[in-house]
Length: 124
Length: 115
Image (cartoon, rainbow over all chains, first blue to last red):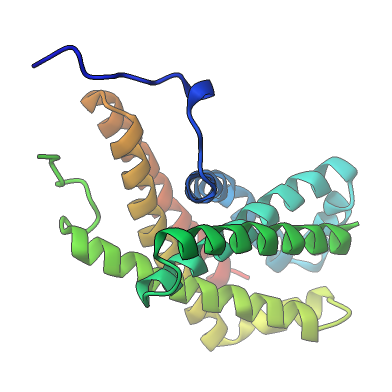
């Protein structure tokens, strides 16, 4: 095979269109949710097993750094849902052209950021 | 050709479809949780416990857990296939992730039926 093919793997020189950013964040958020699943199940367990453990969980969740983790988890879920809905709409042929795809990606990011800020305000 | 013996259904189109079906189930479950959060105020242990005592809610939660496992498996498989090129490393990671998902589903069922 010829070695004269152009190779460009310098990430700093590459341009990431908004669609690429939406796509990679969808993967990252999915992985974050997967990694935090034990935390979710532990919270479900504590909240349901007894009134005492429910109260203990509430106390635990009021700590500032725990709130930050919960906000991060909810942010990942919110983003993943919005980017997922974008995919489901594309399944029906909505916003899958080059230009409309970019607009759809931008709308996804804007809606997700607004929702994540609202979730943050609800936590604090 | 990429070997697909580790993909969830060993069939790309079926994986695609299962990814969608599980996504709809998870979306509906999240809407249900949001509905509980908005309507049941103030949230106390008794109210929360009452919600999950309902058999329909338990079954819906198990359905969501199963959907989560299928959905996460297809997603993780796609990511690992793309980024982990060493076969031994990829298969090891896939085994760890898959076992974790099975444990999560069993853990969830135990939580729901021991409350």
